[in-house]
Length: 232
Image (cartoon, rainbow, N blue to C red; front, side, top):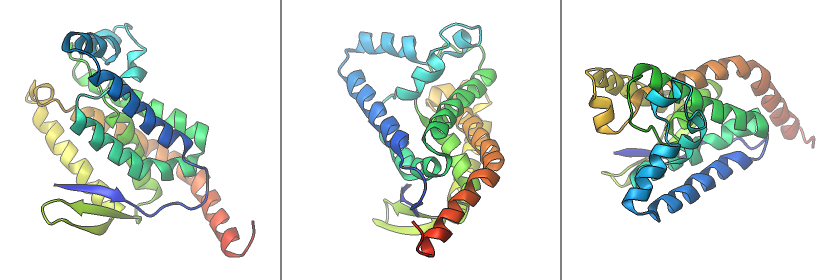
């Protein structure tokens, strides 16, 4: 097993206010979740998780947003929050606070809708921030393909750095392989991982990344050049 634990930080641009706010809200909601008994937690999940057979028919549309802040266990939460902590701040620094907020929520909604379109009859609630975070990863790949990602390898108890292009490339290929395997029906839901939500969010992030890169990356580069020249 290996995990990203750091990257090359963007030192200019906007402060990552919403990146850390999203992280905090996810943790607080999870603390509330684990305070519930099993019956109450089940009712809470079905009320605020995104159920394809409901939202595709115009019901519980609020769940397209609320589901992004629910998690199914410590591993689910910690994995998502680690990726959010490593990658989101640089995207927010580039896009700006309000644009990042819109991008993140819209990415999560796009990921959920994509999952729903492939599982239209499903009555299983989709929960987790991974769809929105996948959108962040897609934009990161476009914005910073040569950034060095610090990766921890648990089995070796050591870390090393790899280009974002390699790390995220391997990640999305794995999602496609697992997602393709899930098409043998029910496998995706029984495994508890919505791979096609990850893929949908990632593709959304890439599209938005390519559209916005020519607008915001030059601004960030100009700020860096001015800083290097001693301008404030």
